[in-house]
Length: 239
Image (cartoon, rainbow, N blue to C red; front, side, top):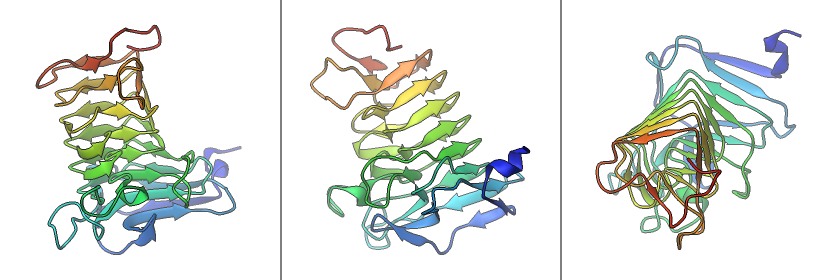
């Protein structure tokens, strides 16, 4: 079988800035929304790569920042190994606890990959993408999903985690700011580099915050203040 045969639908995106329109996903406008109720995989591929192809979110027009009328970049739901590849996801926003209430409206300013009810996470992939300049309540860069060979920069979290319930592989994460840690809520990072992030990258299971993350064979360096890891006791499966 050829690689193309692995996908039921393959959409090739031309170079440009996709900064208009969208669909509602988890009560928030989403610029690119992929949902296949049959569970068959879909591939959305920017053939000219992230330097020329952009998916741009939008601030809430009333607050000028986070809010319930903001626009996230990408939403993936009810899918089996759907792939979004070769894009730059930028300027995605969600609500936060103060502007839209807690819950799914705060999930994933860059990527939100979960079910249509907001419970659990599905098995989508973000591959060879850039995620930058996003701001949100929970899982700002990614809530759910798998990130492979991605570069994530300058994402700010206002409530919990730059990544939540996500898996990162061979990716670079820099310039994260905000509350909570970078890799949180059972997220896992493999062979990644974290450099110059304001908050700790992971906080361990023996801290008071129970929704910890894991980092395997990763480089953690250059935190702008404090330490890259907060835990009372190191465990064999961390760092």
